[in-house]
Length: 96
Image 1 (cartoon, rainbow, N blue to C red):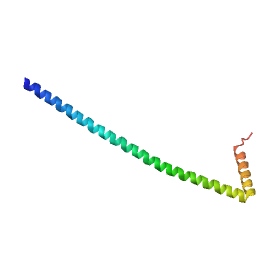
Image 2: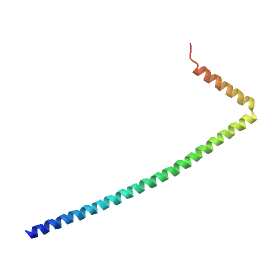
Image 3: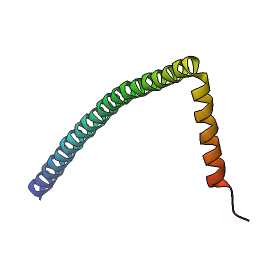
Image 4: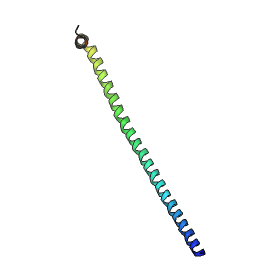
């Protein structure tokens, strides 16, 4: 009977050790996954920051070109703005 008790105790200890080992492996796997996710987020942020800077630079270039056009041909710019405003007013005005 004492032998059965020792075998049961040894089996229980073996199960506990295996469970602890499995828990440690899962913990390491989760930590690796979290670290990979953080690294992927950092890389994505860097790419987005670079693209945003490019868009901002493009916007600044368009504004600079518009300023140059307005300075060199103010009457053409005024006419284009007037025509655009007239078309928008015609398109958005409801028929009564």
